[in-house]
Image (tube, rainbow, N blue to C red; front, side):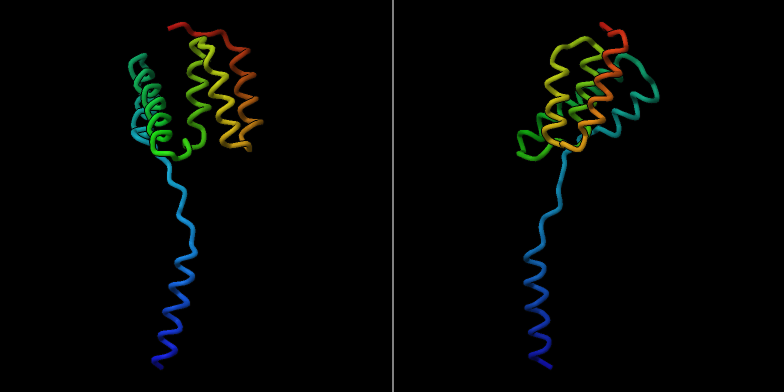
Length: 120
């Protein structure tokens, strides 16, 4: 009985030691600022959300972790609506980080090209 318990403990320890760590992302206050933007839709709430996206990108890069899915794309979309040429850089980063998003990013880029820019 002692040996069986010891053997089970060793096997469980080996299996647990081989498990990979879960992917972690930094979301900051994304949910809160997005909610405010959707609820109020004021220039101030939009600017706060844009600043939060910038912060998520900066903190993720500083920590050496991947930027969460969609953050580059959402930030690029906001930039492109303002007519900022840096938008393409962030669309490209989204596809480079998450290749499976290519078709979606292309769709968003087409939508942006068809919409007049907002120069606020």
